[in-house]
Length: 337
Image: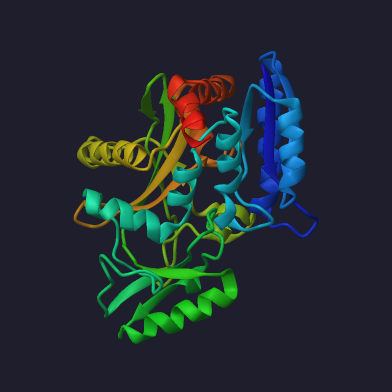
């Protein structure tokens, strides 16, 4: 097949999480060539006319979509999927609606909460709160549109005594990382559930828990930017991932799997995805984020879960491609045309 890999354009000033797009594109390209496909790779910025011309002339059989933002703006993640849908070109991962729904975190929560999916209370001044935070409480202030823990530092966790303090915290965060919202902070364990299409169904890969090793008592136990991207930092080394659990965890792990699959269907996800949870001291899971098209680098959580299942990188990439070519995915492209 003719496969075009699209990824974010990066510059010499790009952050580590942005540069990672190149590593993913190289990995996927190498695997696809080994599988016998004809592969082209292109970075994508805001020149969508050039992208349009290139794709409509080459007319690939499928696009491997690794785009997480355009010109650094996560809120534009759905633009290229929408264009591919309009052109009826099959592509990997979530469609335009799923990408928009899951990238805007308050929107995701507002969608999941009425459907019975537990998600922590939140405060987002731009939309009415379905489940507003109730001070006094601890909150974590996050970017609305960014993933990869961009903008998440220890200072993101704040103690709120009055509701008015939320707006002050959001204004401060917006100067640091763009439009922000506040989410009631859940003390507890952190889990990642990776999901991979399997025929017309979805497979939940082994559950991963992020441990917080030797964390000082006054340090927030969060997977922030340093834990993910700053090699050599305390957080990077003190947040290992584990897949082995005691039998006493069977109940909560099954609860997590059920909720992850529910998120997959509610959000219209395709191909592959990851759902991040916190589990509080009572054993109640809370969905933090739904990640469309999560990172495919070998050291990232999705590939680690796939390896723990016994899947090779080639098998993962093949299943993602196969999901893009299913009748449902092709129908998606036609529906939006």
